[in-house]
Length: 112
Length: 116
Image (cartoon, rainbow over all chains, first blue to last red; front, side, top):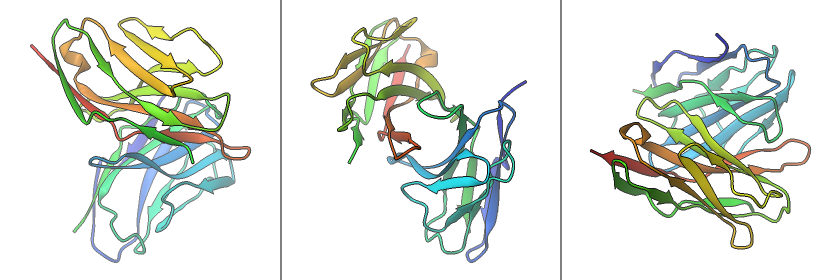
């Protein structure tokens, strides 16, 4: 079945540690996105990539990093520089442009 | 700056009745795209409906329809014959142009509860 997978579903991190969230898609989509969701804030764009080996900062990129070495994969690293990383993280992919974005099931990150 | 505003944080409706969720937006573009996404308690985001700004006809998808008022920059979602499975967060989103690469900007959402 085609779709987007995110792992892990729940992730706990100690303060000062970097952590990487996985996002994989087998929909043959060119574009991939990372969003952060906080209560009452809706979804905010962290990073997006329209093509392999290229990515752009979104509205809240500080404290995050990404890579796009393969079309299928778009991992997000939450660094120790992110001051308030506890949130729900959603990955999405699309054919690019204004086409529908398909979302993964999300990862809940908690900093202890 | 492009913005999306959903002024109703929470709404409720009785099963089988009709409910309308509001969304207003601001953009300087003449051609753009608008979306409604649904996020049920499972937190899986699902596309409900999409509208191209150059089309005057309002989009419909089964029980879901929109009222697109371009001059007023309004994009409301009407859910007819509400079902318990419609209980979810609903997000309005605007396709935002950014150079050669664009992306979506979301409103803060409306939490809809369908009551039996």
